[in-house]
Length: 154
Image 1 (cartoon, one colour):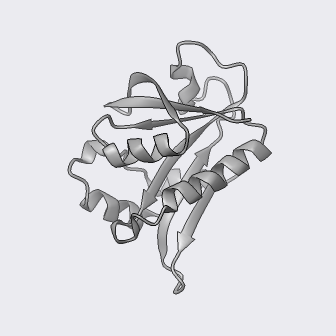
Image 2 (cartoon, helix red, strand yellow; image 1 turned 180 degrees about the vertical axis):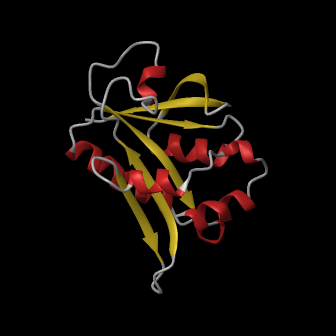
């Protein structure tokens, strides 16, 4: 995941488009209740991954729902990150991984998914909107301006 993250950063017009995550963050996000899903080539090379972050308390600093103007009445989780290798973009991998994360969120009783994207990162914004997320505010997160996206799950 670290190598794929670095490959993505190497192809970004600005490093403010994504938040760089540490190996420890990635490790934590692979442990329950969080979920990591990925896509590999036939040779086994990781070409895309997405992370579902399930806050374990209402005051978890990573809980994006705390940034909403009105506290949701349902359990929430974050669609934390989705990275697709530049050579594998355009194959709908982000949408496929998003669908898998949604299924896991529903399995865990999550009623609302939240995500952030740089207002300048048009590909990420289009991907989120294509998956049914809607912009629900502008926030400052991780030291950057971000759009906050929400998607109710049924």
